[in-house]
Image (cartoon, rainbow over all chains, first blue to last red; front, side, top):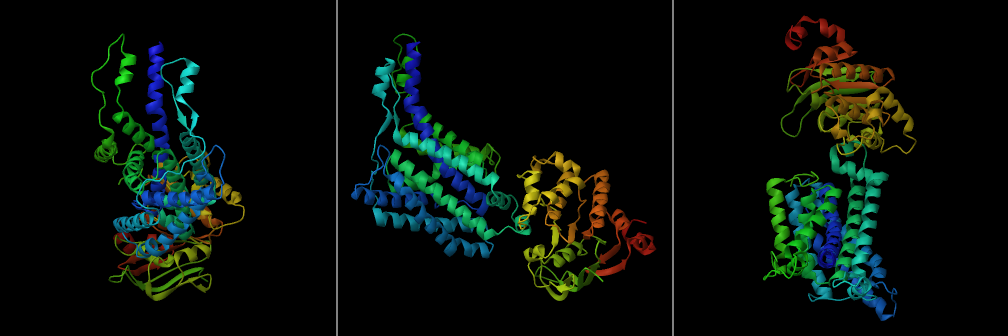
Length: 337
Length: 234
């Protein structure tokens, strides 16, 4: 029995907690991507770098606050800087819409043109972020590090294994839940939110009903900027901030959105966790876990790791390919890609 | 005095003209029906009246006002409502939300209008929380008409409202349309089911190749031997 408890604690510490955290971060990213797809009708390749841009502004403000000695107690100072990051990200996305996407909307361009335009914005953001803050790793997490320490838990329970939960992990999950509830409330209960869903459902009929397309587009970008900045900051607090990592996040984020069903917000959340759990479960070495579960001193010789962690990006890519081959509309039947 | 009038309309979708001097008119509370063979330009005439394509000649008059240059959205604000033939509901939104979206431009209390719609289509009240995309074809048409009525229009334009619904549902829909007309709303519709549609029409327009071929009351057209032979199957 004790062996099984240890096995459970071990898997919680190295798989469950990290996967729920990572899944929440992906879910927020996928929600943004899915919103843009549903309402503006294209895949926004600049999303990873929009997250990087928002996080960069947050980091700059965090440093500035820290230089004044401002902090947020046991919580990271970055939380205080998030509103500023959101503000500048909103300015950027609304500006890019005004200067780039609006032109193609007027011309009634096909989705692939928007997609390529978003790749252009992606490179632009790539450059801006690297120019301002540099391509290296930046650590900006301060305050307490842990909510629960593995050591304390081991002493308390008297077990060989313990679970540690970082402040950044707790923050990520709580924030993600609040944002998701807020977003669904907005989309389902408010007049503006409903008009956005109507616009996504049937654009021509929305126009016939007198829904203002400019307002719908602007609100969408504002929501995207809010979610991108928050998700980016949470990811940076949990791991670290490096522009290239954020660019790479694009693949798991799109995989999440497509697995769940593009254009479907519920699917984006489910997709986020599917991708996160797959990535972490496939790259976790199960040697110790199996040793606990098997009777006696039985123990596997190898690491029992299906794939090295270096290849974790390949997992989301594989899932993406499989979903596109066998169920292109995703789990929750969104729009086909 | 015609409440809605499309006069001497010439135009098309950019290429060759589809409408060649077509005239459509309806008085207040009247049901006007456009029938004719495939490709005659029936739907095009309707879209022209609603401002969805450019006319290079001709004019559209609504309640004595020339609205030829207004956009479709502006015409909605002027009291015109249009029910497209396909994709005329918001499929992933509930029936109630569909109706709310119909009344998007209104800032006053819409509950009374919604009750009127539910009175006209009782089945929709039952299914108010169900997504419109999950309804049957006939119920979906009711949602579409209901959505259009939510703007409290003076003119309701229907593009083949009975396309793809069963004969029983078709009769019901025609009854509903008569009821709507009785409230003083002018109705203009394009129909494939010419015989049934002319039956309820105050005015009938038989269009051929973008022109009016016959124009008269529905009854007269139904009894016109030439119309019967060519368009009503004898």
